[in-house]
Picture (cartoon, one colour):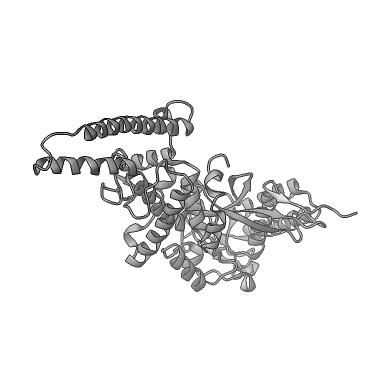
Length: 435
């Protein structure tokens, strides 16, 4: 709060009343939290790079000025410049051949004011730099990581850019009103180089947050039971650059929760070297149909999902059974899957993949053991023994993926239960018990 509060508290009612989205608020926070000097440093770092995350690097232009451009003169300095030009014009036209005593005095006073203003500006600049760090501003590092995330600016329409540019201009005006800049430019004049640089960052923020922001939450527990009746309550939006690089899967391999302001990512099933560690952006196959998921992802994130759940069109929970599971061929190196419902436990069959005679009796028995372990794990949750539940469910899920492949109703219920147990070690809130 020591960074952004002094700016935002003055206009909080305006920001809320404007009706802007929470992502626009976050784009504003990314600037107020860093301060002017760090924003200029971030822009300079981006300018030095040839490109960001495969996109074209920003080139010097009217909208992305060099941060070393001279700051525009103040209003009093502009008046002095006009007076000098007027005197020089009168002399060149022969109106006054010599400098009058009054003009000489004015020139001396103006020179003194120029020197004083230059000194004050230098002191302000040094003070700003030191206030943003410990001592020398040149030694202070900046984190430009969030700005390397994808923005898809090459795919945006003119209408999209116009709307986001208007929001960036509004947020810039807000910064000018709250003292973010030492000498903000008047409304009837073109913003100076520093202001346009910050506006360019605001515009970039508005683009990248569309695809890379995360909602953070806490788990609200019921007064009667730790898990029964608990639910996540979303508190706000933040950007986590590392997690933002995770791809989407409608059947995610990880779950996430929060400890304080930190995000925690934990695997809910076994992963092999080379496996893609994907999370879920919202649409999950157990709750939404293939058409619904594809429509949501295309509209919000601009891509078509080709995960396994989408390719095979896995059913939702209401149509999901344990018989949907497929057994893995026991031959090492063979990836062939066999339907559970079509197998006779003790009968040898020829695998179409490895062309060998195999028996799936052991696999079926192992799968039944997994289903029994799922029941024990859920029983531990009911008794609020979180550690035991995590251990049992994790062991059962590891066994399942060794011998079978989803979809499988009990397996997905166990993964949801494991996620709830893991989130119990994160941010939680429980109402006080009334005696």
